[in-house]
Image (tube, rainbow, N blue to C red; front, side, top):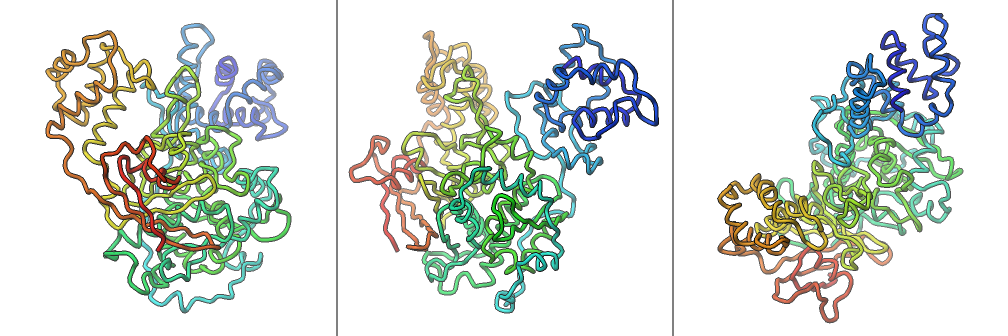
Length: 601
């Protein structure tokens, strides 16, 4: 790889020739050799370089086209004239390594070639050391006029809207949508369902529209017709409630007043929720609305698309064609394609722990990648905070990605799998900005909500514990066993001092005397000392009882709402409670040390 890079940059006379050489090496421009610009015959050394099939195949297998374009745009001054001597090889490889990890590489290859100006927006890599796995995402910035605001839905629009919308191919073209190239449609289908999806798995999605509940108690909810799409409907419903309950003047109690939300309010909240999910899925001002037709060959779907430069235009488009785009059998599936296309297939694949991961699994069930894409706009594969090594041990070499540090979590997530001790959901999902959580079971997703914003907040003691644990684990020799060497105590305290300045040098000396006299420093001792130092009076009073409500949109038997009450107690709920069911155990992964009771309404 090093030899190829150095010779490629050395042989090119100018940037355009270098661009063409890279394009040819990736199969982008057929029938022309490097150096054959403006009729000039290729040099002998150029022919030899590209006749080396083993070297070419090695290059193609190691990196993708985005990296070469990124290198061209950002690192030409560092690489031009580089030789293969030992003094420059390390520098060259460092440049390549930074390129592989930099966010700029995740822009789609096709987008970069189609839009050369996007090259100029990619950031130059920092010379500072990078983490083992950097967060990935589009590097472009949103335009100044591309800002998300609540949609000003005209009063009475829901009643005036036509219900005989035309979702046929001619109907799609009549509203400015054009056919998606078959190869792109096939790629999106296979990323969602895979090449071996059954008709049953596909049909669960092909017959799911965005349908509001007619049950008075659940007017704010979406109805799920069959198993599978709940992993999209629950997050969308969460963002609908985010706008209905926590913008303006929300109802003070549940059940909500009769007629709330109105038809206009729930349609506006649906449009806002869908567009907000799309808005968060990209940092560029580039959105794609995709619609998939029904019938035909599922493995070769017919899709239509339309591109927009601001999210306001997307809101206007969805609101103006509500029946055509959102009330059709394939509307939910089409929205997933829209988010995936807006995010970019290449970007989503880079975020997944496994390159061949699918968004939909067996029986049409949503995979974690799809749920994360809906909740935080990233197609990561796990629910931990940031990226972590499996088992907390770097020696495993298995780095898994969950909720990135820069992800804004407004709707959270808790999982029955944590109650069953298969995984641990990170605090970012457990403590979102709003008291809204998607609840995952082995086969279904539902939506948990509370009317009090306080229910989502992290207590001071819990926040301190999490930061202390993070500081300890960063320098531990055994994170699972909670052990570190005493010489790392100063580093731990320095990390904590970012949030708690009172942990100065004197505090470090005090801690060393108290807990670091032996050869091993234990996490329990460190956590207890920090708590006594920073919260000497103990935990401030917290609410003893919290009332929540669980919406299940599955029909049949629902939709339905269950009242959930969590009450603080002195019993260790981690040891299990008599007559406790899996749902109650799941709630206790978030409300530790609480008794959970549930009552259908």
